[in-house]
Length: 197
Image (cartoon, one colour):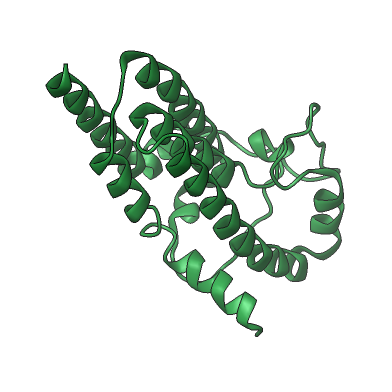
């Protein structure tokens, strides 16, 4: 395993903790306004909706912090438009929080976007190697037609694969900790805004 692969695997295992420095900086340097809260909040909601859609198909398997990879290839729902909707949703959430807070704006938001883009690119490389080995031709066909981050306009149609079932209740269960974290961040930013007015 190369050094780059090791870093990707380490980032995958610790991806729940890497946003903590960004979140703390957002709170410490926050200078939110009503307009920034609404504009950034819309990005956060969009990111959460994408994540909820994705985990409603994949379930709690996306929460694992062990080894890289999945037990099945999901190509429906948001995965029919972009290969990594969860990471795309995360980036929208982090950028949205940066906009909501106006913390060191725009530099902290740009730095956060660049960090998470780099982190997820390394994680995705490790995941793609795994998926390419396990799902071979099915994954290569999917990978060649569905972009990594920039969504396509029409959905990808997998040939001969069974339709995935959407389970929003399971998705909400899986997203519970993320929704709580975003809710706490938003509440603290609202409190910060109220105290400075």
